[in-house]
Image (cartoon, rainbow, N blue to C red; front, side, top):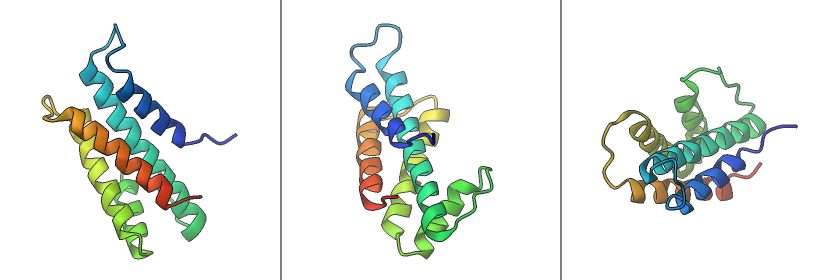
Length: 123
């Protein structure tokens, strides 16, 4: 059975909504993880959409992050590609930077934009 990428979005929402209830992890680590899961939900959903609609063939490398955005733009989904790029930048910031300003806002926006991507492109 194929994994439902929307489950990563569910996990991101859970981490964001319940960050005050965790005793073993900090709110910041929950938020950083939520942004990462939201991005990968959007990325993988977009990849599967492009595969199904445009016969996109992913390479399985890091190049796919840009290639999928290019494929979406080429097919008129510029707004979706731009949202995906923004969430990708937030994900990299959360995964690699020591300090992330406004992490609560970034997390909330990443989830919101991912929801919008799922609603705009449906497989």
